[in-house]
Length: 193
View 1 (cartoon, rainbow, N blue to C red):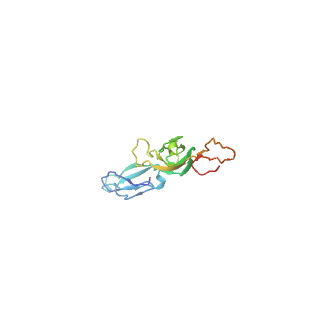
View 2: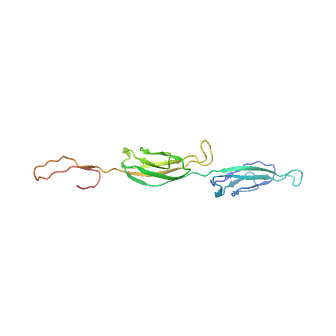
View 3: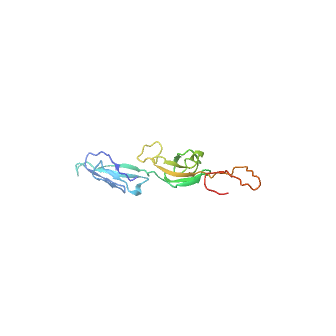
């Protein structure tokens, strides 16, 4: 990312840093910091330290060394939604993410593919009438097994799972002639006969 990188070289005299598109906090300090330019994100940048000839115009020459800076693209994740579905449906959920790899977790239901940024989520019966929070976690942008400076990031999406409509008319009902019949159905919302 664009976080400053602490440089820790070694020199036996005065000198200066050169190279890169970013900025040095102090080009004449061997232990300074370098702030990358936005165009350097996701690239390797070579910078150079040059120690000046300690006896000026004597028999010694300037000394130089190159350091390579690996500037990793930081992870990003933005959850889309919220999503509202009936408990009998599935939710098409999605995050905008870099890197594109990661993993979904949360909820009691099931994912079509937990490792895809765009996938479906089928709620469990127990989630009917609730709000389910699902979390996407990116992979380490520095690479697996490498303890680099960029952390994983998370994003959440909300799935509102509405209870499916229930209609139970009851019955059978019996009557004699034109006597009124008391109907005793069951529903979980408004409706009509």
